[in-house]
Length: 260
Ligand code: ADP
Ligand code: MG
Image (cartoon, rainbow, N blue to C red; front, side, top):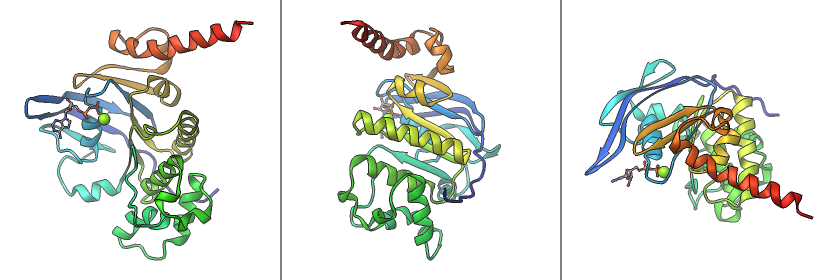
């Protein structure tokens, strides 16, 4: 196992965060307290405001109102590029630079902050996401979708952020790869003591990976509870409408399993 020092995952506090686009309220005043070290899933149908809310945390989107504190420190103002170096960000179709090798992609955050001689560090980061050292010299188009996402995760972890934001990180992957990467990300979360906030539209994924599930609808958090409580039928109508999908699949599979 590569030795990597990571700061403990910080707490994240949102107070009255709101963001509108012309004629559309994307996030309608969200207040939240996320404990350091937790794995939170943000679930909701398309257009409910998940991505907008997530991006206010690393200030890819500046909220119209409200404030955000990370590790108890207000980050609403101040240098947002510096802030972003302390926050890992992984999104669907990672956006690796196609003309750079895997190693160069992984090292980009390190180069930006002026690090030199990053080869050893890149190898450690690739090992962390279970990629062989030989992958370092490949180009992104020589990788499978799952491998590309792993490179994206390695890149996000390069600057040793305590906080990881993920926006549908497994969106474009086949179910087996999805499952493998989900397990790998959870193991990393535990091992590095990260605070992880993951956006997904897949309730099954949220239930399996997270220790807290936030359900978003029309720019608001309409449920905030544990996977266990959701499976027990709690959390309200919007949450239960989403839980109904994996539950029905589970029931159908159970029936199939009993058929001769
Ligand atoms: P989700 O990630 O849950 O699918 P988003 O946060 O992307 O939702 O979007 C929330 C709402 O804000 C949607 O109605 C969407 O159309 C709108 N929206 C998002 N980004 C923009 C933008 N750049 N300009 C205008 N409207 C936007
Ligand atoms: Mg989105």
